[in-house]
Image (cartoon, rainbow, N blue to C red; front, side, top):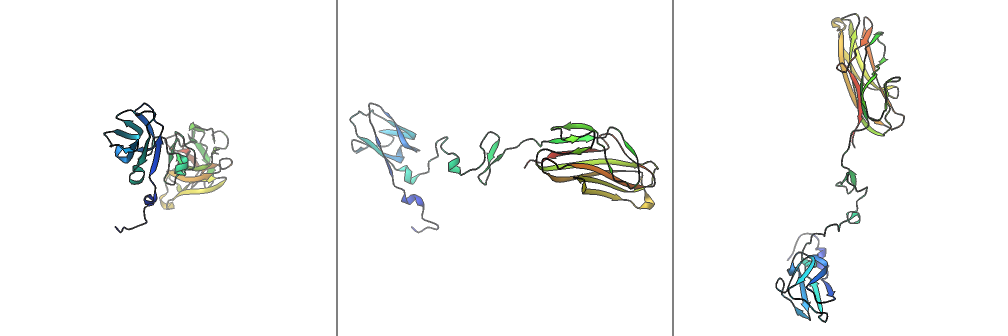
Length: 268
């Protein structure tokens, strides 16, 4: 009968034959697994045996109804090899059959591209810090580093909370970096420009700005900023800076509820 597609390769597969060394037993092991007795033709002393009556078969186990003797000639032909689909025996499929790459272990899984990848993990390293006391007396228009000097957590000790107030992760990868700050003025309603920056390696990487009409100046402003940033795992670092234009000096409020600085590695 005509059909669409390539000729199935299975049509060219020859039936396999297995010769047995007989003894006074009813149990034998097959070279190829089968689903049932109908998938092989068994011959004893050149006489074909009736499936399910003279013998049963499942997987690689062949069981006879009556025991053979050492002088018997017994062989079988695997009909199922050409006409059936057999589930592979447990443990029979390995990396060579899958052509998979990577490391197989309890924490990996096989992806659609035939590679083993991490099945998950923690977003480490990570840290978060806040200011224990306010920064005050900051001149208007001055870009100032915020001194987040109190750590909530720091899994790898990569945040400097006492000198440079910077995060320098020692594991390469992409990180989610975030910060928030509440900025006020010492002169009341005289501020009209607020900025919050994430600096990478000494330069502004991303900025969040709020410009207020000078005729309607305000006294305080809360800003939040975040970015996904690549780190080389050795020398790349980030810091947080703020800049406010006001008619008087500026302060950056303290406390976890008014602002914080943190980052964590993104699982890739």
